Length: 183
Image (tube, rainbow, N blue to C red; front, side, top):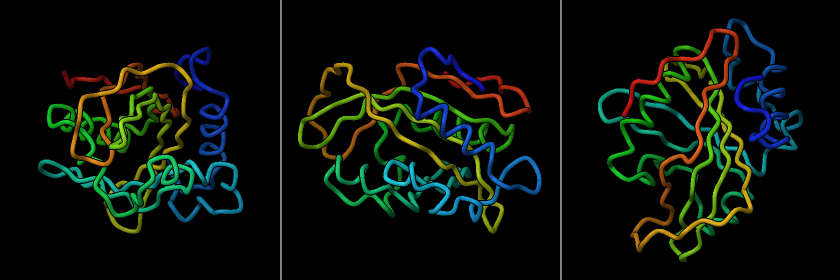
């Protein structure tokens, strides 16, 4: 398993094991392989995101787990994840998604999330690539909320504002870890 096992949660490590166990034809499993029965433990905290990597990019959220939407107190399915990032972080997110899809590799990070209601907390995200029916890469992610304290961000208009990752590691899935060039 990739990443520092001492800092990754048990849920993150189990989600990686789940991804490795998915049936596949090639290096990356198809999204059809993520069946609700097999993924039941992760579904409330699962995100399926499409990654349109051309130009400025777009990351429409295709599925957002019920526990995530309950915590944020809004429906997120259909939203563009990049809208939740400050402009200066968007290109780095597009580059990360490109590396996840092309290497292929996983990504683990701790990111502060700031909700419109003034509450903030760190979230552990563990992400892996999936193939879709066309050439557009998908990312499946499992979120785990952390109990450590987070300084709330100033006021923002978005229902969710994601800060820059506090910790970050690519997860080697057999093709190595990519070289991160983004500043």
